[in-house]
Structure formats: C-alpha cells, structure tokens
Length: 550
Image (cartoon, rainbow, N blue to C red; front, side, top):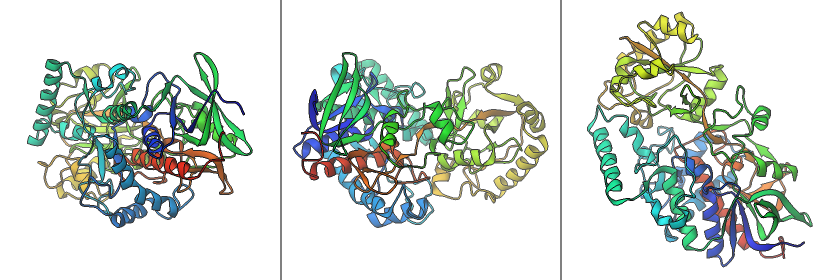
C-alpha cells in the first residue's frame, strides 16, 4: 500500500492525549505525527478548565493507589463494558507514570485545590486529586501563539479555572478578595510587559503544544482524516483531506484516535442522546462532529455510554451565546435553588454537574429554572452579573425574570406556582436547620467548598424569603459527549465480541470512559485522556513491527 509518508504512530486530533502519546512514542525511539482537521490546535481540552484528575500522581503526596481505586469503584460501581476492572487497574497504575513523564518532558504541572465531587464517599479526597498547568505566556509559542483554540466564554485571562469559585466570593470573603486582587495584579503585569498570560485549558494545551514544538513533533493543522486505511485486517494508516489535496499517511505501529466525541453532530445526538438535544447547547469545540468515531464504528468498533455527555448545566444569553456554567459554583451559594416545571428541586445544587444534568433529563426538567433571591445577587456573582452589580440590564434584555413574589415569578416562567411556593418553604426549613433532608446539599467537603463559609449553619443553604426574586432558565449545557468507542486496558479499540481491531487505539472523549456513566471529580475526562494516550503509545511501541504500514 502506497503512502505519501509514514510514521510509527499516527495521532488523529489534538486533545490532551495527543501530545502525551507523541512524546511517549519519541521517548521510545519512534516517530509520531499529530493531525488536526481544524486551523487551531488543542481540541476541546483547549476550551476546557484544563484540569486533570489522576489519583496517586506524584504531585499529590497525600494519596495512594489503593484509596484512588476504592473511590473509583465506589463512584463508578460494578465493572462493565466501558470500565472493566483491568482498565481501572491500568488507569490507577499508569496515571502516576504518565504525570511524571510529562513533568520530565518539561510540562509544568501543578496541584490545585478541588475536592473530589463525592468527597465523603469511601476513598474520597477532601483537598482533591486534581492537577493543572501553571499559568502560561502564549508568547512562548512564537509563531504558534495564535494557533491555539479557546472558548469564547472563558476570556483569556491570567487565572486558573479552580480560582473562579473564589472569585464568586470577592464581595463576601477575604479569600475571594485576595483572588480578585491577584487577578487584577496579573492583568496589570501583562499590560505593562506585553505578556499574554493564560490559565485553564489554554495553559494546559499551551504547555503541551510548547513541549511538542520543543521536541519537534510534526503537527499538521487542517488535515481532516476521511478514511482509516486497512491492510490484512489491520489499520495501517489514514487518508487525509488537505488544502493541497488528498494524502495518505502510513502508520507502522498504529493509529490513535483522540478526535473528541459527537457534540456538534445533530443526527448522532438525535440517535443516541436523551431529548431534547440537537447539539445547540454544547460548548465543545466546533470540530467535535464525530467523524473519526463513525469511521471506527464502520470497522465494527463497539460503543458504550453513548447517551452520556459531560453535562454542565448553565444558561444562555438572549442571543443564544454562553451565559455561564452555574452548577455547582454559583447554584451552590445560599439563596439559590434549581427547580423543574413542577416547582420542585431537581437535585443537589452544590453537587456534581454531570449528575445534575442527568437528573434534569430524568425529571423532565429541560429546561429547569434557577430561583435566586435578590440578596444572593447582591453578594455573589452569577454568570454575566458580577456581585453587587445591578441585574436591571439583564431583566430588561430578558435574561432574568423578576417578581416581588414567588408565585408571580413562577407564573412568568411557566412553573407551577403552588409547587414552587411549597418547595421554597420546605427548603427554607432546611436552611434554618442546616440540613438538606432531600438531597444532602452541604453534607460533603466539596459541597461546602461551593458555598459561602460565612453563612451559618450550612455554607450552601440560605433562605429564599425576601423579594425581589429572580429566575433564570437552566439548560443541560455540555463540554463534550462522554460515550464512544469501547477500549481495553491497552487503549485498543474493541469489537462487540471483545476482539481488538489491530492497529487502532483511542483515548479521550471519543471513547467510553473509564469513569463510565459518572464524573468522580474535576478533570476526570482530561485525566483519562492523558493516561490512556500514554498507555496507547507505550503499547503500540512495545507491540513490535509488522501490524502496520511497512
């Protein structure tokens, strides 16, 4: 089979797993190329908070593999097709090695405070097992500094995603004030020096891209893979569409798919996902259209968890653009609840966002409504409204509904008035006693970290009793689908009978994740991508020659 060029590993997509895999191939003495169909590098990782959950990694110091596995099993449940025991073993064992490898390759990673989402479960960690990248100056990328994708809803600012919860408390706590002052100082420094300092996903993918460039990894933008090339039953390369025409790139050891899910594919979402959902509510990158996943499925690849997404319930502005991810950093503040059309609460507003999105669909609460007491808006930020700023412009443009009574607010929103009034009365009793008898809001360290430490007796529970009252439509926004190709402990793509498709690997949102139908902690998706990108590269290089292109 003729190829225009050949590498040991051909990597499709440029998410978090791609650079990890490419560097691991090079460290093993091989060659790799990264193919990205868009004009910008980074995939949905560049659009994200840029954090990774990897238990017992070397940046922690207060965790161990046994505790991490205990927690993973407690949250994910019994092993299944997406998350078999051997795959969990690989994630726990290889995760620390992957992180150490990236550190050794010059990727500056740091630990950040973000409690496990179910921190009171067996093995849960109250500080958190989450890591991120240190703030990054885009100027270090030279000619590539404007070729890194980013999400318009997260302004490119010198702040880490884990600090946004502190910023919501800028008016009420010293910790919040310090976070605001730190951000202001960093922005001033950038203005004075001309630096382009970024945090979140841009910091992580910026540092990954810098490592790839430093190690001379070939990166081909605007190279869309249109076919997986097969010879003797094995994937031996890819066909790509470029501005210069069609090319074929061979793979001696295999092809790694790290091309995201199908967030922006309306037909696939209609086929596999709970409804209503066309993909109009996704905040994933524009290239997340499912093409490579469909190519693998056409070869007989099995899929699982296709109904799932990394749900991040939030709001849209009246023009349809991003208004904010509200669960749990803002909805977990005192004076806020989220209800369905019956006026009853959907779930724990200070809990895990993926679970909350699942509950919205299960309850028929799409859309749901955030009910916010006016005092909460005066104390805490909410999406486009900074703490203490007048919400009047957002009432005028229709983002907020406003009323002096809960019954009037309910009628405006199409919520059952009696249901809402009764539910708020019940919730106010919980707030007074400091115990949420329905959903356990504020019972875990993670929940309490989302609240206001100055609020007593429970930092997340505050009465909703003094008008005016506000309502905001809450939709099941997402940052990517979280179901896809079934893979084994070596990141090989499997058929329905459990056999591996020779030469084909996958990692990231294109796969059915090791965390199954759950989201145990901040960065679980990126953490899995990094680990299994590393695993795929090492397995491919250890597999020996002969399965791929000559």
